Image 1 (cartoon, one colour):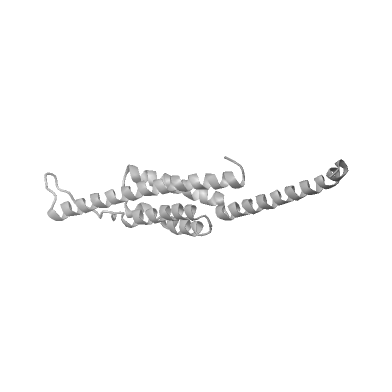
Image 2 (tube, helix red, strand yellow):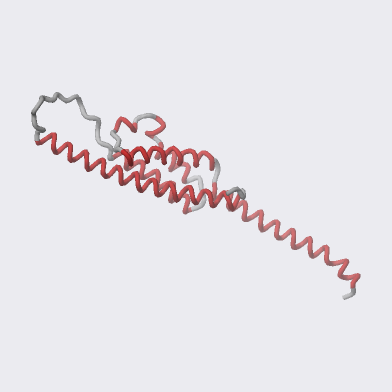
Length: 171
């Protein structure tokens, strides 16, 4: 091959390599965007809200009335819906684990105590003592669910950040 042949064919080969690289990069980016799923900011906001609520549960156990407001009562269903809109299995697992931990914490919340008449110097009845023991056990289970939920949220946010970094390029 002469120098003239190289000058003629080199730009064509270079264009073919660039076009191939562009197609491969476009395919990878699309795959990562699908794994990230739609509404990644909505998922991040829900996870931040859930992290704040789990921290409150971890500090002091919560009773059933604390879970009644609308933003708290269906948080597990919202998270599960957001989880299954993703194609990344790790992110799905972490988000659904966080949602299920919230559901378990909500279901293990002790009921609100009714009005109680106390007499000075009176001891607790056996029924009251067993109720107090049951509440302590429920609060212990609830705090364990909060710990598992916080761990799942941390892993979900790490995975979400990793996917965003691959896709969008922001750290």
